[in-house]
Amino acid sequence: MPPRPGYRARVSDEHELCLACGMCCDGTLFDVVRLVPAEVVARDALVRLGARLRELGQGQGWMAPQPCRALAGRTCRIYEDRPGRCHAYRCHLLEALAADEVDLAEAQSIAAVAHTLTGHARERYLDRHFRGRHHKES
Image (cartoon, rainbow, N blue to C red; front, side, top):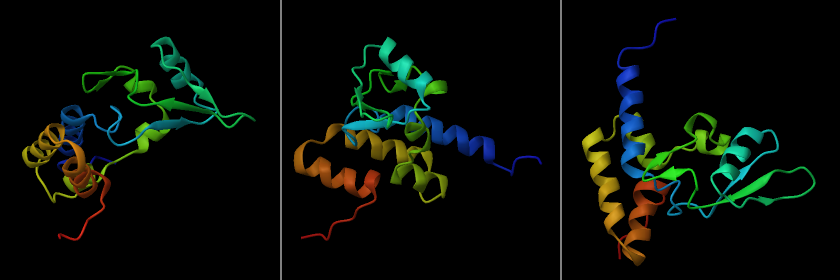
């Protein structure tokens, strides 16, 4: 079955947004990422990069602290072998891009602004654009 029209361009736009952002890997959005026992390749790759993983016990997997040791700038050095949770995660902004609610330039601008903010203003901005939580304006 051939891909739907625009599919390759959309994947490319999503990839470009992730490379402009990296906040799901740099400790901004998450403190840890859980790896399940079957993710031995990802675990070994992270350990080779110096990550100190915490074993969860009883064969339940590992916790990888953020920022991720595989992150170089905003690029994942183990992208092909990254943990399943990393592969599956899609922030609110990425979903908005995929749904054509924002274009790539606007999404990259939103990510750039997020990188400049600090404190409470940053948390509110992250909630709105990345975590999908909206606050009532007061």
